[in-house]
Image (cartoon, rainbow, N blue to C red; front, side, top):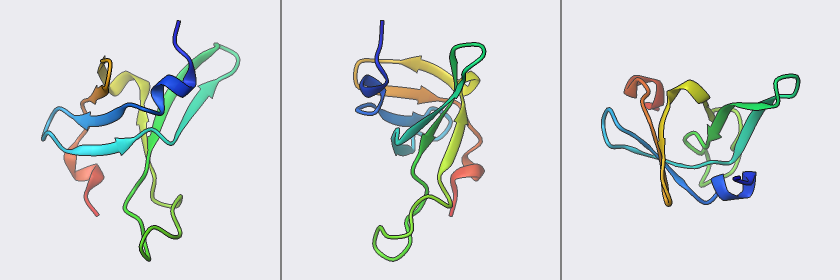
Length: 83
């Protein structure tokens, strides 16, 4: 069994272009189904790291292809993550 804190220490990498998207900063849950529906990684920061949150990337659970010991591999359109 995994804990949510285990996920926050893993780096998310897009398998389409090899880009490192960052570490998970949040997760979305379906409380009725009792499952994770998406992971959230930080978007590009503004003003040297301030004002984060508005542009964070939400990656649907279905886009996760592999969860390893250190990384999570996702398959998402690279254009979605361009600033």
